[in-house]
Length: 242
Image (cartoon, rainbow, N blue to C red; front, side, top):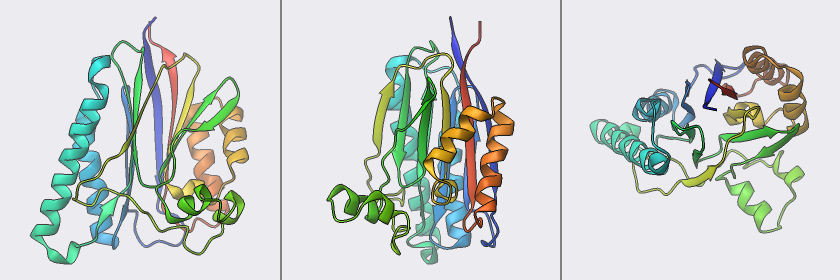
């Protein structure tokens, strides 16, 4: 049995932002979501640089090379952002989140790279699990027991990111997992996860079998909740390609 990703991406500007600073890739081997920051033009550029650096990985990669491939692409993205800032000092402070999933050519392993506050969720056996931890000020407060997760969702500083790709040295979080046929992955920017409850995300992932319909439904839910930010969603099923 050989496993691949059957993926769909939907991205929307939202109802308030003047431009979409998110960038996305969804393919048979690679999923990636990048949410730019640091001003409209610069944020858009940063997320584009990140996706352009990582999308060549959407190819058959040996299992033992997954994390190294992701590390190399992220280093390339950081160098690209650094060069863009050097070219125009007004871009100083620009950056992007990046959450990316890479499936091995054997279908027996996948690697997840994460920096920032975009998220990855896994639906397996009807249960949804968040597999990334937000690199944010409020998540740090939650971890320290200062505030509850419920308080974090409405905290005035919930948008403050503590780690991102900004052209400087950064160490993303890497996770490796064994995929199973029937798994469903959701990668998204915080324009979805900040306004749609986790239980609603799970219900939608279960209730919409078609990935395209599911992704569009999730975007619609975020818009219905006010769409205060750019919304980017990738829904991907692990399927038997044999």
